[in-house]
Amino acid sequence: MDPKTDKPLIIQSLNVNGISVKEKREKVLKTLREHNADVLFLQETHVRAVKEWKGLCFCSFGSNKSAGSAVLFRKGLDLEVQEQSSDYEGRVMPVIAIVQGHCVNFVSI
Image (cartoon, rainbow, N blue to C red; front, side, top):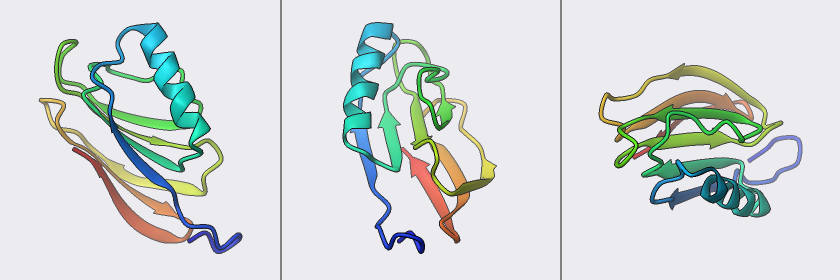
């Protein structure tokens, strides 16, 4: 919960089946923005970065044809990243952060 607004943290997860093509990536991100999530877990991204995302973005890259996971945080979220790492196969993307005063381990698998 956000102590300032008593609003719960909204977290969504989606297998995007590859967003290496710019048009598909922009369509997926537009849809995700419309859902007003605070944190997004993406699987099967097939990209090294999601440059169009306005907030913080952490990616674990597999190849351009398989794997890839990401954790995206909404722009303006009260967030302080403590640690992030990734595996070499693009299967796991963990991010430890202080969010709204709480230490949280976010993991996209």
